[in-house]
Length: 267
Ligand SMILES: [Zn+2]
Image (cartoon, rainbow, N blue to C red; front, side):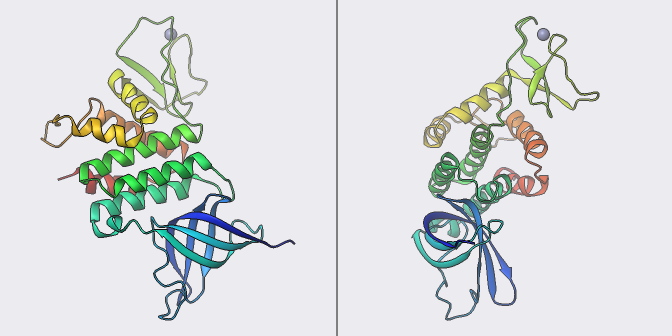
């Protein structure tokens, strides 16, 4: 087996305890996609890796790639961007760890994905300067972008043979709008009725750079019926749709997402 020494920029997605004093760190690398590196003795006071990584950091990583299910031996780690503000504000920390966790759960080991790497970098960079509600917008934006980049973008195209309507019936598992002309192939399809506003909002989120989206949100004082900021029409529908669609297509457990939204939107 050949062992290759690789130097790559990497975003730290997850840190978990591993044996008594060690960590298992999961990264999204620029060169090799998602990988994990055990860091032996990481929690000892004299560890060379002390303070060098945390969730949301971008680091320069040197590791030995051994082609072993994405688990590699780390040699060096130099933090390039700490994104301190993510760690000092609870709502930013919540959003950042959700973004990292979502990436971790939806990408495969050793699968390089440049566009996703860049998108996650942009999201983390921007969340540093977000207030609580903007952090929630950034999380929704990332979910839409992620579906687009993974080739899982829902197809909301309306049937040209049906009369135009504000609503479509959407088959969640198949990922497209169904009608009598284009019926579901499933015996019991799970469907959602989706309003035009929500579908337009999805497209807006998926196609707009995050800074532009946030700047548009800052330009309005629109609120929901409870008086909470809701800068765009269709937000409630989009949140609900993404929850159902992500759970179906990315096999996500709804708990983490619900907690994140409760923290960032609730109250
Ligand atoms: Zn039709």
